[in-house]
Length: 490
Image (cartoon, rainbow, N blue to C red; front, side, top):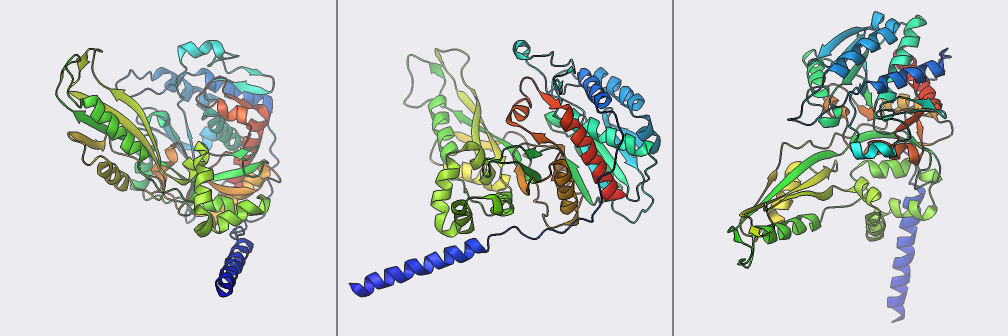
């Protein structure tokens, strides 16, 4: 018996030693140091810039779903206004109008051997539901500037970035700045409804021209004032984004009167299929995606217990999965999510429909593909008669994961430190979709970051009510984008 206890103790000591050693080695990966370039001393009127953002919000550039009537007039009016508002930029950059609405600008650099920088933003916004207008403190498209904020739909998503990029470029052009590296600006008009006519078309134009950008940068993440893991500010640079796919599940059975139902109907068969798909096991782990890189980058600020668990996932994975699974936002970072969202059945309560349909939305983690998820779903419904499972439309795969050791990542990290001094920089995974997903073929790396510091209230306004951008953040963004342009292309 003593020798068994001795072996157990020796095993525990050995495991403890491995855990301690792996935890001690769990440190941020080395980052290529960006060349020391001071942020430019820009001279600009922050209040005037805020007023221009307010004016941009007044153009109701609402993108609509397929089949709805597209109103091009606000896009045309906004385009004309941008030309008059930023004359110095328009004088140095060649403008192309793509598919009637999107804007592609090229500010040619003096050294054609240098790969260009590609800066992205979008011109369109989501609509405002009529019933919610009463809950806004200012009219959603008023562009009001008050209490230190610019208010209105698109203030953050994404006219804040659009205007900040143009403000920075215009000021630099006025100052006589001449880039060595070409700067390309791609502003899509339909990001909120797929980006296929805007970003996808512009990316194809660039690809056909043989453009291979040094990097592309879009919206998607920023400095979070209070990160849940550290309790303090963290600048998150999106190095990947999840894919988007919607599954259509169809069940068929005999139609009839509700007074004489069969043992199973299309509705009951569909219900079982939806439950099986919703509950099918999908891997949840830190490895194989940006989550482990984020935790590693934040290691010095994390509690020892979390560092030990992350460094030893081989041992603590059940605990990690339980903890992450309890938080929907945390779980979304480490796995593909499954969300049944729409149902269609009979036209009347006393009719047994011959067909029932459900739609299930998946946000694909970079470790999964749409083909692997479809195969799992089809396997999950085996044995249920007369049920078909297929993608409702071609899915968008998760993006490739961009490098965190590249010189372009180091450059964006330097910009983030200018925007939020003292905040650690970490890679992140963007849960939603952005135009950037189309540019993987024309850029060495694709990143998603805005040089702003957002509180929870700011983030809640995106696609919600009382969307707003502080004048302080707008100023921070203008300086940040100017720093990126001068440090990257100067």
